[in-house]
Length: 276
Image 1 (tube, helix red, strand yellow):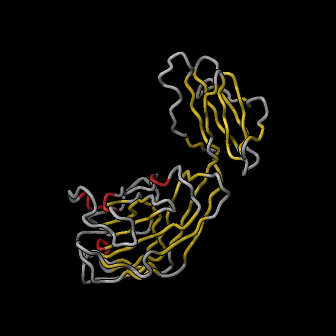
Image 2 (cartoon, rainbow, N blue to C red):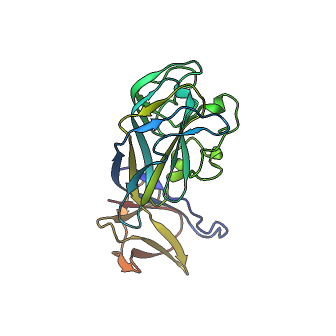
Image 3 (cartoon, one colour):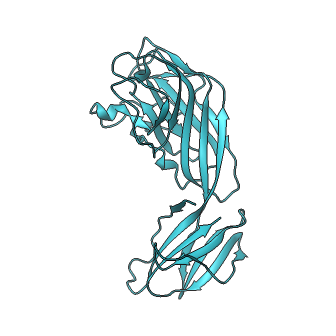
């Protein structure tokens, strides 16, 4: 079972205290699809790109409170365009986090495509092609303007996209660790005239959730806690990555809506994880 490490500062200034690392329990995948066609309209330019219709296209995520995003994937179904490098796409999460999915990819010459299925995944082995034709497959989110020596996207997606979105990274990592609940928005724009297209079967948002494991020092104790909205998680510890994991005692008690375990601090490096 995969685990997703949490980043937090555990008393680095107190050299006498041991080093801890905590991991989350991996949760389930949630897949939501908006099947409505996104029409990629012609008529835009680098100053004000043309907005697709609808703008934005949306998907709604609803999972138990207290879970956080551990990974995001996006599938574009039926992508068709007579000049794909005209097209830019921006994903915005419920709390306003942003990630560019694609921009200026699919060839600097006109390589029209029809009915492609594109899965965007930060862990893919290749980026979308900047100088050659697009094909169906699994790719990293890609901002082709960077390959053309632009420092960022040369324009903002028009409002209601968040202001300053030209600085968004071509990655799905900004969504990691955030609350997945709410409306996710896909903004699609065309930044050159003369060509058009669509995403005929819409898009699917794939979100993996995790149970965050929190750690705090209280006097000579380490207090570990996680949400009680997900049952069946077991807290384990080990003195090193290669060591055997053992269940942590005592059994957790519910305090203020969270499972809580209090352990004495002890020397050495200690890893904690939730398993589900």
